[in-house]
Length: 256
Ligand SMILES: Nc1ncnc2c1ncn2[C@@H]1O[C@H](COP(=O)(O)OP(=O)(O)OP(=O)(O)O)[C@@H](O)[C@H]1O
Ligand SMILES: [Mg+2]
Image 1 (cartoon, protein in one colour):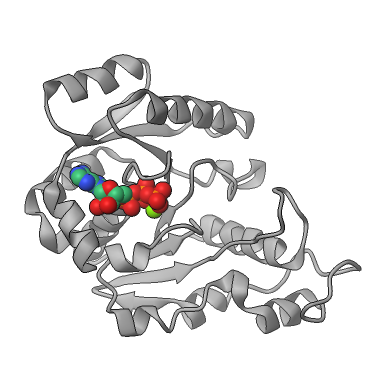
Image 2 (cartoon, protein in one colour; image 1 turned 90 degrees about the vertical axis):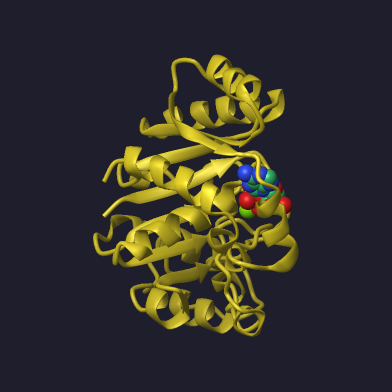
């Protein structure tokens, strides 16, 4: 079962692509777990999860009592010792919501004013991501922020594809190049590019040229309906059949 991690600069279309791919795998009858690992994102809405259900989702990072119980700490107190291998195996089933055949798990964010902290929440998330990546059962689609913070040397080999979304423009291309270096640092070689918001041949050629040497899986067209689905909180896959068709072509080129 493919394990996909999606990254790229802010706003390029990571969440849109994650929702499209999740839907396509689910339609094949596969068990799909979509992970919202971008604190600033909303995969639930791109998947068309109704607002009343969305409101009931608590991100894992905010489940203080659960984290305290599993890591052996007291909520609100930090420092001191805690378990580095908390139990997480029951979390996907207990805390995911399912909509149209896609299971969604929202990770939330560890906000401690600096990266790389070792605190109970971050240990919990890291352990959970590792557990999910190393497990074999589901198609896993992880919607990440710009970077690969959720991954590390121990999990790099479990990722079948690190998909970097780019849009026509220097900035997202530069972010892709940075991600390429970060990925190389942890031994992650399976990096693929998806171009998004492509208006014309010039946009396509720009990405092809700037990222020559990378494996480009395909291009998604610029779609006013994608924006409309975001405005209306409707599932992206219901709004634009053409976008879905292009996403299917991309999926076919991914490791199966
Ligand atoms: N192909 C497209 N054509 C037009 N607009 C698009 C396309 N794909 C995404 N968008 C729009 O761009 C915005 C950002 O998309 P999306 O949320 O998928 O990006 P993201 O990379 O996940 O962003 P963030 O970094 O904020 O999580 C949204 O308003 C979305 O509707
Ligand atoms: Mg997003």
